[in-house]
Length: 106
Image (cartoon, rainbow, N blue to C red):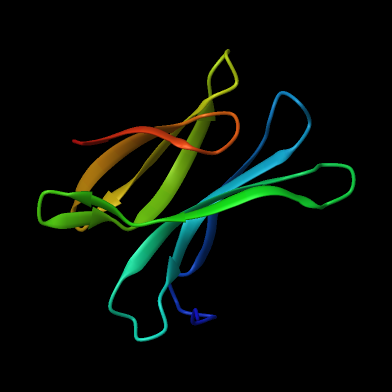
């Protein structure tokens, strides 16, 4: 179960991908507001059907990546997502199918 609308929940960045789909990144909070999860979802640009969607709890030492703020598509079709880990920054890379490749705290 997820809460909505929480003041921080939702999409923060949307891009049009090379294949014409929409990619949205942001965050969502669990029902008791104890944890935020980063989210990313790809939506077909023609039919508006969800291609794939992921919620991720990504730990970095004692903190977690809790909010995706921006996204860039690579020439190979993968994606870099920048976000927050409490007051620090983080960068993750996901594949063109949405699976996590790596995550790094900055």
